[in-house]
Amino acid sequence: AQSVTQLGSHVSVSEGALVLLRCNYSSSVPPYLFWYVQYPNQGLQLLLKYTSAATLVKGINGFEAEFKKSETSFHLTKPSAHMSDAAEYFCAVSDRTYNQGGKLIFGQGTELSVKP
Amino acid sequence: EAQVTQNPRYLITVTGKKLTVTCSQNMNHEYMSWYRQDPGLGLRQIYYSMNVEVTDKGDVPEGYKVSRKEKRNFPLILESPSPNQTSLYFCASSNSNTGELFFGEGSRLTVL
Image (cartoon, rainbow over all chains, first blue to last red; front, side, top):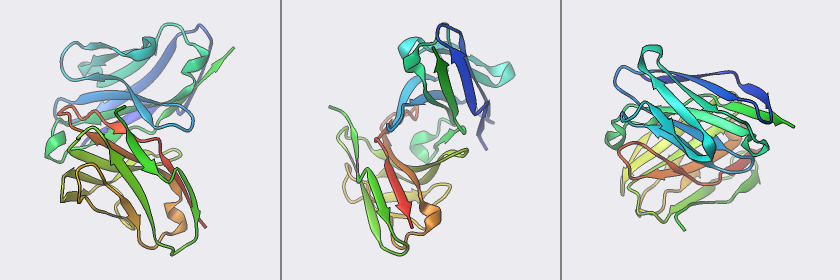
């Protein structure tokens, strides 16, 4: 069975500071990993995904994440936070059997606040 | 514009009154799914559909029904809503082997 744990339900940073949102996964098979962002009153939008190519994945809006198999982690980072980054972020894992009935498992979410 | 459209976006109803939340996608995706989002629990899958006339239960299917008569539409039916179904619901679709989902904007349902 797969699972995802996001450490910290709320993270607050100052504008211009490093953003680090933590995600650890559990999977018995090589996973696909995703980060989604949800802005207020909107649906989820894909930030970036890992599908077994490069372990450092770059996404939209300056975010990136690194797949570390030894640590079973897929932490999301951004060097310099912007006010517009305030949102809820979800890490998700898929077991690659997606089109055979597999599914995306989501973490509990981390709400990011950015202080001026 | 490629999108997943849900209706209604907001609904307040009473216990036992049947309701349907519609979902339509214009991307010709085979896979569609419904999730509910609750504080502290993230997103949990209710039902999914691999293709027309093929549906299956997710993690929290109790109290819900779905149908997939056409590729583009995947309505969620609450036959007899109860207050514990008060939640934010998302429809999503995908045609990718990587599992990348495209989400609708959500439907906030309150059952009194």
